[in-house]
Image 1 (cartoon, one colour):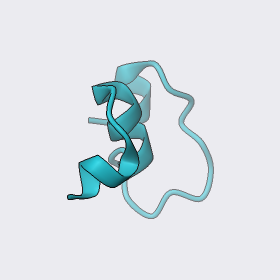
Image 2: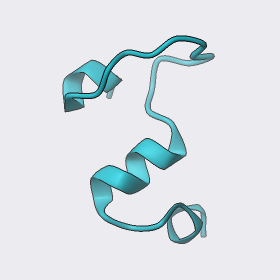
Image 3: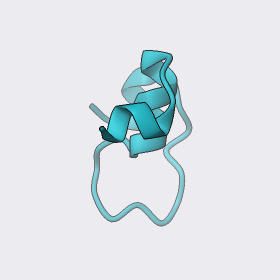
Image 4: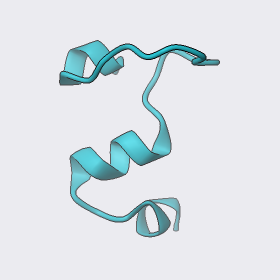
Length: 37
């Protein structure tokens, strides 16, 4: 998924097209630490 597909601004300085860990965690409603585990 891209940030635009989930309603987030595209942002600058992205190395890859996908979502960052923090963005996925926010969308899932969990903490970043929990998502990483």
